[in-house]
Each structure stands twice: as C-alpha cells, then as structure tokens.
Image (cartoon, rainbow, N blue to C red; front, side, top):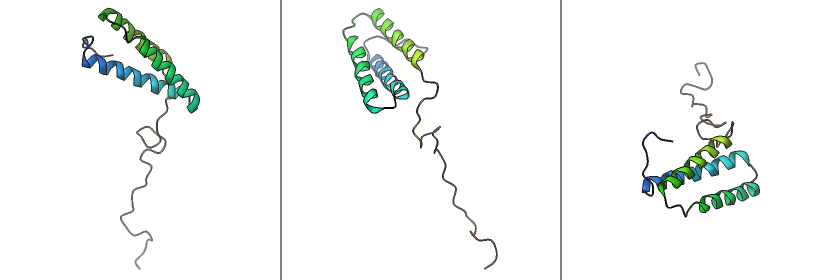
Length: 108
C-alpha cells in the first residue's frame, strides 16, 4: 500500500486496518446496491475483521493485511458508485454560470 513499512500494533497500523475496513465496505456497496443485501455483506465483512483481532505476532498481522489488500484488488469494481454531486459524479459542476450581461439583447 505504501512504500514505508508500518510498525505493527501502533496507531499507524490501526489507521491502516480501519482504512482497509472502510475500503471493504465501499467495495461491497459498489457491488450490492440493495440496502438489505449490502447490510448482510457489511456484517460478514465485520465478522472477517473481528476474526483477526486475536493476532499477536507481526508476521501474522502482515499476512492478514496482505490478504485483505489482495481481496480488495480482486473485488475492485470496474465502475464504482460515485455520489452525483462529488467529483466524477453525474451532476458535478452542472450549474450554469449566472449571465453577467442583459438577458434580452438590445438597447431598451
């Protein structure tokens, strides 16, 4: 993910795992647009992350993180959901600029 190694069991590593969790949830949402199906998938993702809470060795932790990153690459959606008003969304910067001159041409 990044070029510099992150020490295990530190705050930086906690943020890395939280980032992986958020990415997994977003990837699940990209694939499952129905809320009830998505909710079941989020529960399954949470169970998978909770299953690795017992890890106590740095090597095992690194393997688990590498496996999660590989799974995210495998499941990456080719056309992810983008909220309409965000950059890349269908409505991003659609507002037409306000006309500065007269709306009706001519000298009235």
